[in-house]
Length: 157
Image 1 (cartoon, rainbow, N blue to C red):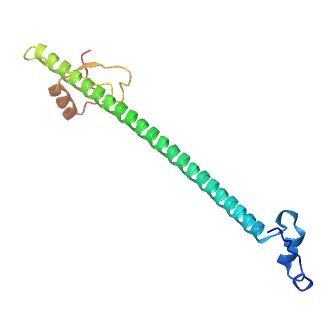
Image 2 (image 1 turned 120 degrees about the vertical axis):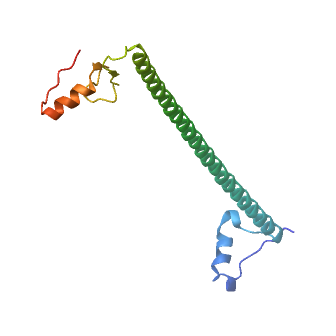
């Protein structure tokens, strides 16, 4: 059917029929062509919707991958921090045990009747920030000096 659809004078006031008659790509010459055009437009519309959906799905996938990578990186940093804290705690415990062992050795080497020796830990006394010092003191002498009102007590080096 190749009959031409013509606009009659009473249809000319209808804007849709005027557009059909004046737009070259939409000018319809038969009912079959009109159906073909509508089918093509519907097909284009479906393809466009499919492209948009694919683009949206891809954007969501990329966002999900980025978030997973960030989460993985955070977990790795937390694991490294935990490992550093664990090593620091082990190091401090080792230092404490070594100090305790040294104090026990010093007590074992003492002769009965000698004043006790004490090791000052670097971290325990604020006046000895950079060094450990061996201090001899006699508790009896210090207590008796304080009770007599003497502020300075001679200490042995």
